[in-house]
Amino acid sequence: MHEYSIVTALIEECERHAFANNASKVSRVEIKLGILSGVEPELLRTAFETFKLEGICREANLVMNIQPLVLRCLDCGQSTEHSERSVICSHCQSGQTKVLDGEDMMLMQLELEQA
Image 1 (tube, rainbow, N blue to C red):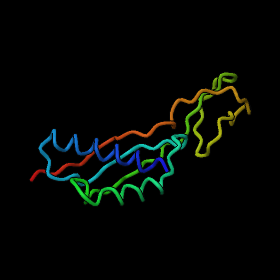
Image 2 (image 1 turned 120 degrees about the vertical axis):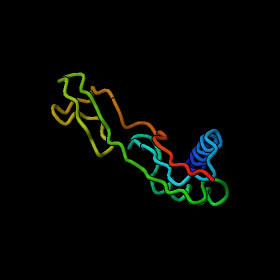
Image 3 (image 1 turned 90 degrees about the horizontal axis):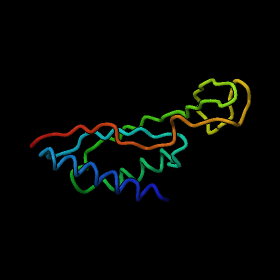
Image 4 (image 1 turned 180 degrees about the vertical axis):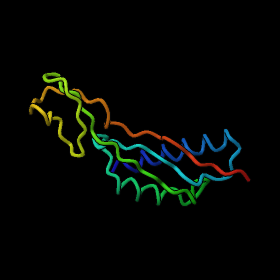
């Protein structure tokens, strides 16, 4: 499960931001999680709940915004949004598509509290 190493890096990044801003606590962590990111949301949530128990993120809520797959068809030119893991154009059924969004996991926002 690579979700554990991802969460470890996420918590370290949260701690860096908190310390840089003299925060005593991280209360909310918001991420964008693309459906093609290769990260399973429930495994990520479980890993976050496990690894946050000690440290500045121990009371943080994890908010995951699942980013649909956004494709542009290289044949018909249409841009489409998919909630499933399919790279086939829903307009013309072409497999000649380019992924515009939905492959990444990004830290979007932190809510920090001062002592």
